[in-house]
Length: 193
Image 1 (cartoon, helix red, strand yellow):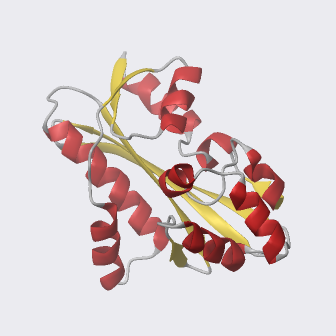
Image 2 (cartoon, helix red, strand yellow):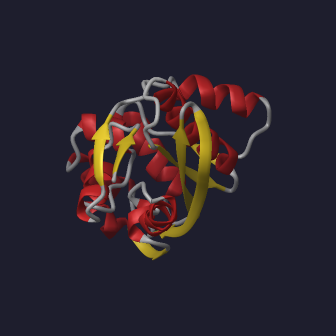
Image 3 (cartoon, one colour):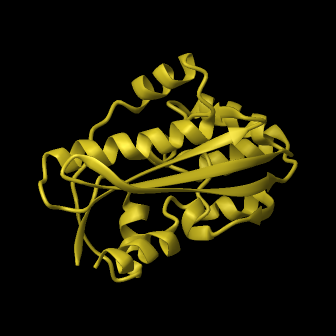
């Protein structure tokens, strides 16, 4: 069975490939900042924002690709119920790491399947992460290992690369932390067939 992945994330594509899920990538081009700002103005919390973004991406691509099962996904960081966005610059990345430094926070990964422009299934998974206590110099050294394009595309910590060294502990599924709660996705696909 082939699905459509409404995401340009190479990591998400790799997770699907690693689990033998055949997929075609069609990027949704949703303006995430516009959606986030609108939802924040309405008082939405990070989990609602993540869920809505996954659905919007999935439905948008699904509406243009009839009879295809389309997977949308979104991940956000929640620190004390405050949404932490992906950085747009290296300076922002440092500010985010300083904010998360020595703190427990949650990474929420939401996924949504749509068909013919309507959501047919969604799921959110929350993982708890506690960042170690670092000096500003150590945080800068960590950021210097990451290309600016990677930081902007994937956020401040890359658990699939050097990001694991940032954490005191991680409670959650690593695939979900990298962007896809794959076990739940596979369960849905198995029922769908």
